[in-house]
Image (cartoon, rainbow, N blue to C red; front, top):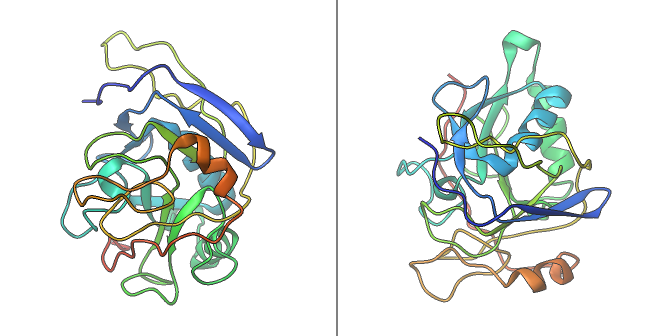
Amino acid sequence: MATPAIGAMRSERLSKNLCLTTGGGRFVKVPGFPGERIDRRLLNDLRLLERKYSIFLTDGYSDDPVHSANGEHPIGLAADIVPNAAAGGTWRDITRLARRAEPTQDQPIAPFRWVGYDGDSGHGRGHHLHLSWDHSETSPGKPARSVYTLRCPRKRKRAGDGTGGDGGGTSGDGTSTHDGSDGDGSSGGTSPGDDGGTSGGIGVSRLSAQLDLQLLDPVIETGGVDAP
């Protein structure tokens, strides 16, 4: 069952490589990955990564304690990824993706907020790649108001069952531009919240201006769902 969308969805392409979407957050099923859900605004990005890197999603939206409570899994803005061997995917593909998302250790490129791979405990080649997307402040279990993605989602008509479209679309394009990061005690935004009950972040109006700055240390996960 999908969560209610938060406000009308509006997308703005900030550059060839970066899209900001405000509103429309909803946790939905991920086509092709039974049992997995994600914030629907990431669906286009996941499709892009499937095509280019032959990924297999092992976990998306989740409140499982294996994940950091103040990370992005509990708000549907993280993905644990392994190769899709059935589609010819290999760890070389996943390593290419990890290097694209984080060319330098601990310096992810927007829209990614934290990248867990080689050099990060509980992650890496043979285990899994973790990707978190940047966003505005929110709390676990609640979609963030604003999200940065590689591709802009497209608003779709509600499905007949009332659960709403997936917002996947194909509009926009892009790959990545600069850096995003997390703070202790929060799961959102590019800087930490000031109370442990929320997912940290800065106001949407300031996010774009700070994408070119080195921000605070990310929330680092030590767990995750690895290859079966």
